[in-house]
Length: 525
Image (cartoon, rainbow, N blue to C red; front, side, top):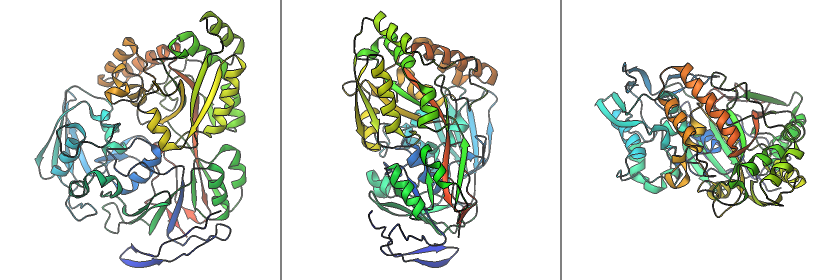
């Protein structure tokens, strides 16, 4: 196993210079230094620009470097003040006026103010903005209801929406709503994602490609200096390697522990942390070309896969079988009457016969590892076996996470018939709106990579996001779930209970329902 090389670096912590000088430590004898948390991530980040990325793997770093106007209160998905101290909402729900926190500076010393907020949202929403181009799939969809953003004065900013939009505050707390330094964007341009500047608890120090992203404590953080001196995020794609590094002391924290490995961390030397959250793991089906253009074939795939066995045997009981596109963690919007597709291979064979399809050939994209992907290779192999048992002819193609996203996000046409995917969301609007609407096809900038289209679903989702009454929103989402399950644009597989492992030298860490990794209160001895 490769040696773990640490660069010598002076890290500011509470105004004192602390030298990190570890050289050529073997994982067998690795002892990470006090005050420095080493996190084993599932993949290399795509970028460190919140307006450009989509993966929770990247969000886990971003949430420690940047702040938004609001944030989720610890342990919840309820919104509380952050860079905004308070806000007012107009009676018709279309105008939000935020009072900003005074005295906050970006890490580059430039002031945080209303003009900075305007710059951020203009960058995302105005195609004529000089720094608008942040890549093919930014999540500015979250703010498509925003008609204008204006600085009322230096510390007051007003958003005007084109209609009431129920998820607006929640979306502001999502990483897409994090506020970047305008000066840094103008300085670095297209390279800002490699040179991030925010107002968060940690400042960016270094990104060594495929080796580490290093962030250092911000002693002047408005919410109190973090206890840690630095955090090192190491991309370790192979799950077995992450487990070995965790067991040997090469890393202090591991996210997304393979279920089969959890028992190795029982005992006093480690802490296993779990947290339910709004997660759904599914298979995108290509509805534009190939066998899955036929609803009967899509339903056959849902009946063919033994999801209970996947959950119990591959995932070791760390998930529940999914019934549809909405995670049960959204209890107020979840349709409890919806039953998962049962495992029924005979029914699957009958549906294939009814469709007049014999031994349909399927190209199946699987990732080696990525955020929320639930032991993807083992899951993919088991799914392949189930599908082949009823007559599908399945070829798996496996890709590294960022390569996988580059193939799947632009759409499956000309690529594959089926692809793994996982979403961790902040509102029941997010996943279906970004991945099931007709207007969310990839050519329109969305994530509907399988090209599903149902006008009734489109109408339900449009009404749900503008409904001001939560009971009405819930009714609309429940109706949507029934239709989508019947249409079967996906194979609905599992809802995961996220996990992490820390060494016994780490205190004060908890997983969040948002799936973010918040480290400003963590202590490392």
